[in-house]
Image 1 (spheres, rainbow, N blue to C red):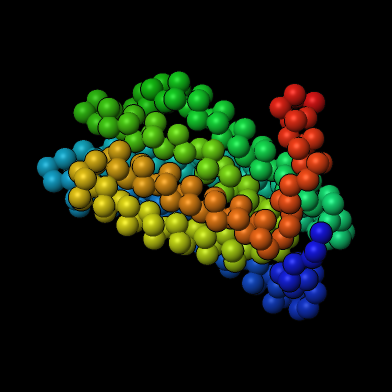
Image 2 (cartoon, rainbow, N blue to C red):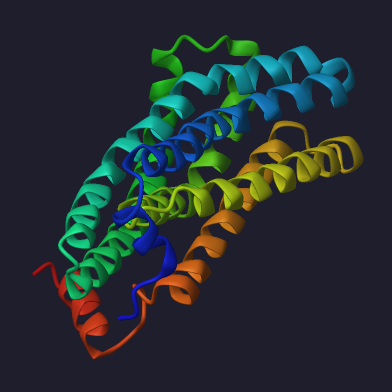
Length: 244
């Protein structure tokens, strides 16, 4: 596997400069992820007419659960981050590639699992959070659509962890920034033009997350060669599916 330029950069040169270049994009990425839900609240508050207050309350009621999920995924993905960073530091290219492929498999399987289980437990969670009856239906609609996007949301976080593991925090930030612009544009189109209210902002959120995930997967193939598919990759996937 050819070692990419940014792997060389993180392992060589000034330590203080590398730490700063690594930490700042990471911090901005975390902030930007938290702003997705805030953008949804702002759009439904401005462009849903008489239902504005109810839509804002519905989306806002989901904010604590969404923030919990986002932070949980970031925390879980740290496992991949640590393993790949260790492999990268040891110049173990084969191990880094295997860890990256395993991370993607975990993200997809975990995402589908949470999406399915989430649909079943969302009503109980909403009642546990004491969501008011007048916005309960809209909050449920928003949360259930958001949960459908769990596979791509997890995939983004695990792919971002792979990049962090090899010393690159800039590309996850750039892809998430682009997805954020798409999210706002889709929010405005689906809510202001198509009048989809809370469903519109939820669809915009999972669509923008899907875009950021696809971009990171593409960059993993294009820039790092960590995700090159060979016979060993298919064996790894089959072993996961067989539970071995």
